[in-house]
Image (cartoon, rainbow, N blue to C red):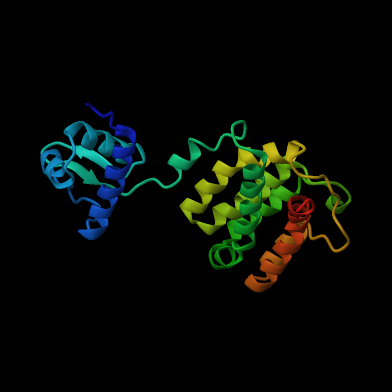
Length: 229
């Protein structure tokens, strides 16, 4: 009697074991993993399974093959693997809403980095951006282009490349959710803080005040997300 072995499940397990091996041996960027033959003996599986598991680690950018060194650990790109699957057309509405909300949560937390790193040139750039905005933004629902320009500049000011790349990755999701019926449409309430007012607070270099102002500025979006909960 013969039995069919679920090789996909086996590859999953070996992939997990390889990551455990990396952690247990305290391997770091530039270090080599054991050779394929060693891994087959260590895990008791075929070289085909080992190669498939290693391929998965290459796909997510955790290792790369180098001549005479075999599989070598590299500093992974944490954004690109997520970017590949972040297509608004294939994500469920609840997932899209959660990603939309995540963007809001991140922006409230940008205040300290913005105040610590902003320059006079950055302020001039923000001034130029708001010149194209309406005089009474509190009377209409925001225009997506203005949001992307102004908030994109705030991300840039942080000089945190991971945060900047993450924001760029979220823009298609943000636009899709905004233009769809996934979240309700609401108008700003009394006390709404505009981009112009945010800029005036930024000029005072007060991180605490900016955090509070950003919460107020984004409250319309939180309301859109949380209204139907």
